[in-house]
Image 1 (cartoon, rainbow, N blue to C red):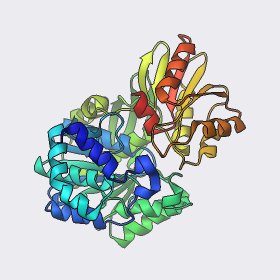
Image 2 (image 1 turned 60 degrees about the vertical axis):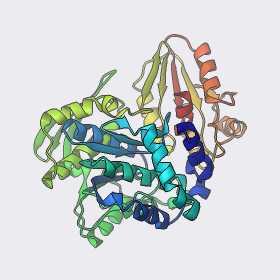
Image 3 (image 1 turned 60 degrees about the horizontal axis):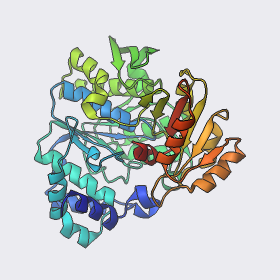
Length: 427
């Protein structure tokens, strides 16, 4: 098989959550363990940092990878989903794995695919572990896909666990309260391994404390490690002054939206705790360059990404209540005449709560991602109307954006959001 044929095999042979939803979830680690055993347990052959959370885990993963890369460490990065190219999921020092590797790995693992019928995500996790082990990375940043306790990535024993924040998403799989969702995310906390929590919350703090105590894991809240935070927004950078365990640091991040403040604090806390373990040393210059060059070093996409300037077109993968709330806050810092929003979603989101947060004075271009899990655009438009959100519908995100660009004036702003997959198709 060539690369395109290999991807077609992986996409259609294996159950894929992004396409079909809950039916693709394997609710235990049996398949992942079997795949890793077949591959001679590559997950034991490199050091790692494990990241879970409702929002921000992708940004935190990329920032951590960028800093460690600038510090001179050969750094693996596993994230999901991808936006443009499957190989975005598996990188070393910002460079995606090769098409040749994807083909070769798939051929190697085919007998296991036929025998145990794993999910798409289980295969990609095993692929990443195999790639990082073969290439002898110094450390790999591993982002969970969904939850934590039963996530396929949860077969590693990391040097550090990070849980960014807890908010409502995938309740039908993770639980209907923040405490229940936190319990699933807390499943990545490992015995005697430190854990950093990105956001304090009365409903979830006790869950994390209980789990950490049970497994003797040192627990740190980012707010306790990183204090006296002051931020300044510029068009291209977010500047942050902070005190990290008694040391003053100044960060200039190219992830410049204000909602990244919490994520930057989480990364600073994680790096501080990592250094305390004396495994990795990060000089001030590496810290500065890592934050200022995150997008360049890791090829991160879809986080307040400016696609065009006149009119300004921004794409952001916010796709749940907390994500849309952060986007709405950031929009208040933008200057424009009229706001145009290209919006599509998948059907397993609490769409009414999301729509209730969206600005009512925008012009909407409703659309749908091109996958079975999509929320049909006709249903979306009907629900949006009940929330006084008015606009027209288009079957494809590219069509919706095209019309928005034709109607927007030079000083208007076009926002593309609602789903990873809408953003991915626009990119």
